[in-house]
Length: 553
Image 1: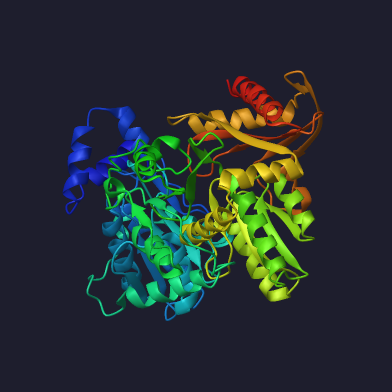
Image 2: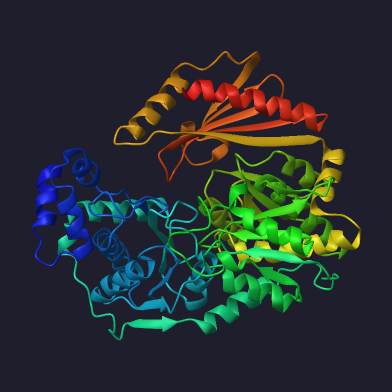
């Protein structure tokens, strides 16, 4: 069916949602906009769906959500999982509650038991709830840190990790065989739909509290917290309160759910701009630490004072290294560091982690980008007993120090970071000071990313073409530095699954990774450098960032 025929089918549908109907009427004379919305089906991958909210098969709307739920229903039924059920959560984005209820109605129409959270909840709690309730799957309606125009549909399997690739492919295959208007829905009051809330909240927070390293540390520090209008507001504050952090000030302007994220350009803890209001609070209150969780609360960013007393954002890599050192040193001090401990990180996260792990004789393992791969390793090691999981993290501000969830946990990370800040405060140090002491011990590591966006229908084709060119024409040098090694992860490097990633090793010990984003129309270049001083490593990174910019055009 052509995109114009698909458009007409939607426009002529008798019971079409009024908002969708109005959007279709507005674009009736704009073929390009029709093509953008109807030329393909929003793809269901291992991260589920993610797209701009609007009308069409290539947009996030209740009809596409229903279609995805129908596909996932068939996969659940084929696995004899209807009685185990599915857990559904959602964040603060536009239509998240509507999409969650639409999904629940579709699952119930397929005679699948549903556990629907009563109000917005964080991603890690959804992951936790799947295993707590013995469900076969889970769904959370979220687009993480994307701008307000986006929403998404993340699907999980019975181990609490994101849906495995074979199951995700089955869902998409079923979606392509059906029309969005073929999907049946039960009433929202169907007895198969069970509302859940407080009992799961309490069990989740209890598990997070178990992961403290030094619970008796002096908690006399002042913390500014912003949930960026998202799901972290209640659970993060509750975890901090129960752990004894009583001097926590929430950024009122960003406390309540707001689908427009009206106080920030983007609700992303990677962006310093989002902390502008929080930093004003911190200056006024003379706070020790600023914490910020993204809308679905699976990631956390922090701001601390530097050696000049100015507030600076710490990177995801820096926080990952600090957490690794804090956890490993604390467990060793307490005599609880297991002989078979393991820390897991993504291939594009800092190489400094290896130096930290070596110091404590702990194994470090690299996995592909995507926290589902860390979840897979947790499951594998629990079954085999080969390693005891201690920490997993990604440079994109995602951390998990326990096995209660199988995805990034901003609640768990926020509490550990607060405890870590309190521990160093007892020593007269900030987290910035702690990071500097690690650099002096292990060398100066620095990482950065350059991203190029390719919007429009041909955006993905441009990215594919760029990756193809780099594969077939390996650069002899990047700038003035010779390339001495290349790895193509489509060839299953280091026994990892195939992935559209290229790695270049340079003569000066710098490593570059090139990979397309899995959720946005962009390509990323990761720079991982090391030097003897902060200035030298910063200069290296700046130089390679310029070179990657040239490569991406």
